[in-house]
Image 1 (cartoon, rainbow, N blue to C red):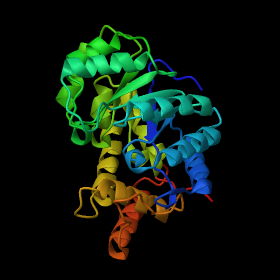
Image 2: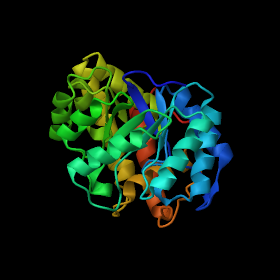
Image 3: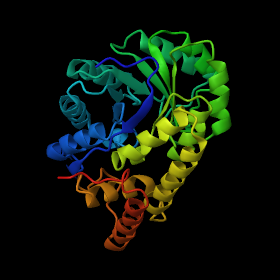
Image 4: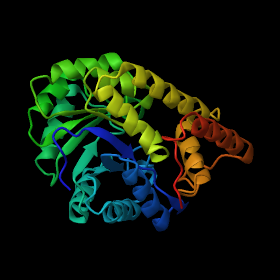
Length: 313
């Protein structure tokens, strides 16, 4: 399915259901895809941070792409994370994604080697010429130690095949600088990663969000985006507070830096959407931590029963 210009609404950064660190849980992948699409998301993004993409072997990455495209069945666009330290793997995965029916690719820059802004711009411009699909930039300095500076985004936004930017810096001032930098490029998507900033970002002009919690409660994030898009400040405040409760109760249940992803997968397991298995180096939560997450989910479902819905099957 082609991507809209700009990509708007909620893109779910899909988790990767695993039966072990090396095996895709295919029935759960189909169940999860149906859950988020029926919940109203506008696109699916696989093999990002939430999908544990960098930890998955090459063959499993391709299984995820094929399985997701089959499940989506053209109902929503599928975006694929291609970030890797090997250019050969980036190009190979890109071709495989296009063959599977994906709509666009997502690249965060070199995940290991430091580069200057001129080197980064040159690398991306050269890469785009070899890609079979449109490309989204992915600003994620906490993981890559590379920042797409606003002027670099401006330069790259002049390339028609570059469709937008997902920002996971959690820096709203940076995000607003990028907005000003690309003001002359209509159709360039600006997507907010940290869901705690989703309402504020959309109110200030973001075209959408890429938010992990939409795996679990897609209707909540769709409603928050829609309220912000129409400028309903009171509803944004109400829904953003529920998102903050989710963040505090599910993403912060443990004391680890991996608590976000481990908490989300635990919650999805409790909801019956997929198992809790994770790729190395992560392991699932303990029973006591899982109990805290179950209690947090119960509170959320009481606060917003119309939006925090578990799947019916």
